[in-house]
Length: 306
Image (cartoon, rainbow, N blue to C red):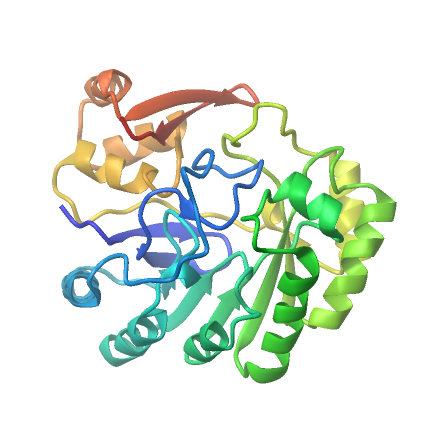
């Protein structure tokens, strides 16, 4: 069973994405209220080689032979910029495939010159910006105590000036937190300074960390598109999940560790593999490392650590 490379998974922005996770489960410098993986269990800003680079590359070599994909994406179960050898990882990806390399990050460490240098070889960097000042930053992203909003956003502005690749900025809208006209205009002011190539607007469609997190009304989403000059990700079609793992339950566990799957997604994935759907669902529900969460009248399967 692969530990670090998974998918390809369907990405609304990146097509069929072969994922790489160089960070342990829920190790991050944020603990966002909307995170689909649940509350951060290791809140840290320590950068280190959490897993041996050589082991990650060995897995990537195998997966590159097995699948066709559009992008290799460094993302996973925490903040990937905490991986101290992310620059070497990007360089290795570029040697192994001609496909684009993307990094999905919260952008919190761009103030660090080393992080900025290491990301330079990536084709696309996808940071996030959900807040507009220190108070909203703490309320939405709940960062590590050493981080402050000004430091983070100034890092993004500096990164834009140095980086020659594409920056696709994501704004996660949460009803009642950052979706008012006033707050959207404040976020838009920062976006103008960061100057991303694209802006994507997302909403918490998968189970969030906090049960009170809700999706804004469609009227709010449309207003956000206008104010932020962005595209709502709900408009972009999404493909199907894949896995190189032969055992279907192992494959599902590998996916939900990084990306909760809905009831219908599990059914479709199991049917495509010729499995007894009811048996797969029964085993998932009994698995102590799986929690079943309901959101918007839909059931999701999410990984949890015992």
